[in-house]
Amino acid sequence: MLRKTPVAALALALAAGAALAAVKPNTPTPMPKVQAQMKDVVDRTSTDLFNTAGEADPANGPDAKAPNAAAWARLKADADKLKSVADWMLQPANGKTTEANWTAAAKAMSAQSALASKAAAAHDAKALALAANDLSDTCTSCHKVYKKQE
Image (tube, rainbow, N blue to C red; front, side, top):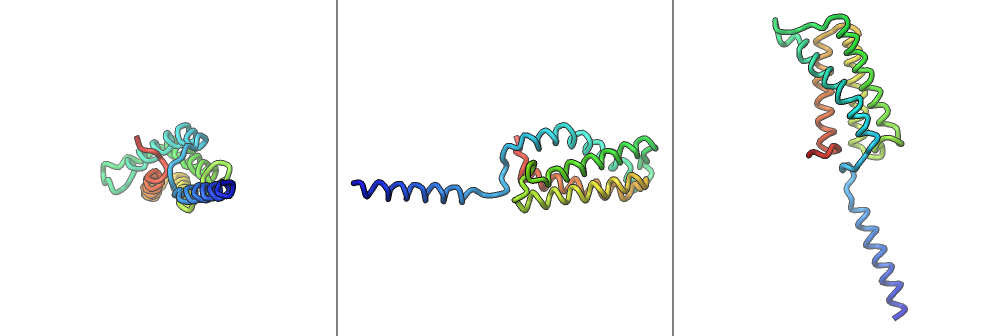
């Protein structure tokens, strides 16, 4: 009977290890620091950037609303804040940097935010609209994997 106990314990340990290995990467898990950054910085700045870029898009023809100097400065600041958060999420202490989807999404967010900042600095509505659109696509694809939808 004593021999069965170590065998049973080993079998249980192996089963537990297999269960842990079966957990899929790239699944939503609570990340309070990331959630706070999203709520405190990303939600407001991205909404402003997306809305203003959409209104300024030259594809709107005569309905396009070019930002004034203050709005361009705000858009640049918004894009810079988004890039800062993206770069912050690439730090192992803050994000899921061991997961390929996470790293790719954060790098894309950083790159698109940099393009938006450059476009805003140049007062280039077409480039801003393109960068904002690509940034929005990046957000959507990341949220499909990491943001728990309620």
